[in-house]
Structure formats: structure tokens, C-alpha cells
Length: 138
Image (cartoon, rainbow, N blue to C red; front, top):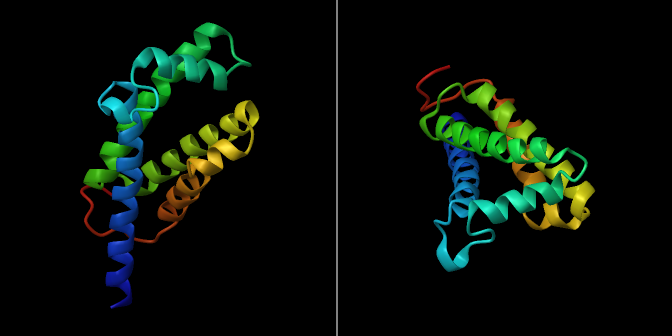
């Protein structure tokens, strides 16, 4: 019974992490309408420049594309259960970069308000599991 509970907890954590990241991606493509934080790519790109003020402009723009690519890739992999351990480590690293960058640029409150630290640590906890049920590729 204990393993069954863990199996469901892992599945729910995968779904939660995936939907959270896909929601952020949908926002930057304007799919959330009046509920959007950014609402379009230009606003998201400007926000990324604000967070990555220490990078040259071209690298800041590039980081917005790279972050979006990995958010989509990791989200899809988590949803279908592909390479969960490695994808969860990648998700944790990506969210840690977001949390640290937000903390430096905006202060510690922003990543706490958006639960970025929680997502990073949840992904790390998922990565540290011994086995994964409902996955398509170990």
C-alpha cells in the first residue's frame, strides 16, 4: 500500500510541475488572455532582460528562448513519463536558476511568492526516487 501511495504522489508531482511550467509558457504566448502576467513574448522578453541584467542583450534574448525550450521539453517529458529521473534533475536545475536569478534581480520575495523554490525542490525530490511507475522510458 505504501508504494502505491508513493506512485500516486510521484504522478501528481509530475503533473503539477509540468502544468505549472506549461502555464508559464502559455502566458508568454498570450494564451491566458486577461489572466496573463506577461501576455505576449515581447513582455516576457523584457522581463527576462530585467532578470538577466548582468548579461549582454543578445544573451538575455537567447536565454528567454532557451528557458522556454527547456520548459516545454521538460514539461512534456514529465507528463508522458519519459526519462523522469534526468528530466526531474533538469527541471530542478532550471527552476533553481530561475529562483536565483529572480532573487538577485528582484529580491527574495518574488521567487517565494511564485513558489519557484518549492518547484525546484519538488523536482529534486522527484529525481531522487528509486523507481517510477507510469513511465514510458526509464
